[in-house]
Length: 445
Image (cartoon, rainbow, N blue to C red):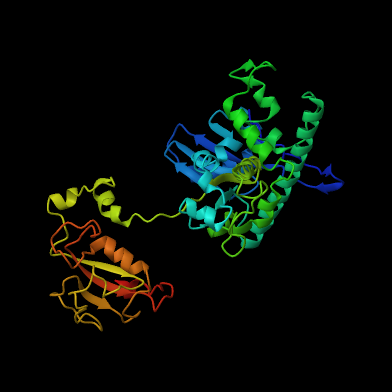
């Protein structure tokens, strides 16, 4: 059968502190739908026949696979119709995206169990772990059919956060009653704890088909998530400072949004408080809450960007960061070849590109070619200019492809490009530090 994964499946308003709100779009959930056929056929040909059968609320789908006899899609559908289709059509697999399925595979280890992911309390605290105060982002993908514009994504995100905070408040009340009265039989209202599959009382009472006795020790993952929620958004302070500090950014193509916990233009450090994003429980409980929402398709988190340019040469040739160069070992160095690179510009005085230590760049501009040049034999500046921005993308790319340091020519250098002995014909597509402008295929080729 088909079960929805959250207490958000409510079609009417429910009173909370006298304020009536309507949780999400209660009738719609993300589903994985796979169609199997005996004869070879394209899933695209069958897709629009499938959509009404499963109660799809939109023709927007995400194609996961499209084989000759099996096609799988991600779509938004009505739960009751999806259930009927699943039990009546043997060639159709209908699987609801449960909360755990929505979580990125490494998010618990990389965020919840990683103290360095939490927002630092202060600049001095950040320095202790070599932190550069990078922005911590929880990334939320929306189910198909939602979003489409920045305004719509903003609307969905705002409503989602409002609903999560209301459910967290219900969870705080329940925890107070349990601590005061010890009554676990009381009817439980919707809360994050009761919506999240790992902590819901209806789920944790049964394990592998066996009913768990009341005096048994709960499973480890149940203990972990219960503690996270208790110390996080269902705590007394409700992680209020975390919610106040975060900002929302619509993601590229407007199919989701990022929750920035420490925006660079705002509160970049956490207050010394358990209600801020310096508390890992606040962050992790927010992740759990986002996963139970029916409008959510996936939840992930970013990581600090680390440069590993010196390993690029080895990784491309051997797949390992160690100094192994199987291409070079058999003489594949790019010698007697000219590589064409089109990008933001090239720093011609850089030691990986210049002709001599004196900084000679040669006669390679304004349509000229100089095949005797050590590295750059032609620099097309008829569309852009004759240089790259500081730490520019074009110099980085050209260096990865064919850069070679001028000193110690012929000696091994880990920073050399993959085709270190080749020469470069460069096409500049930018002026100054501006963005790259496409001159069109006819101009490029």
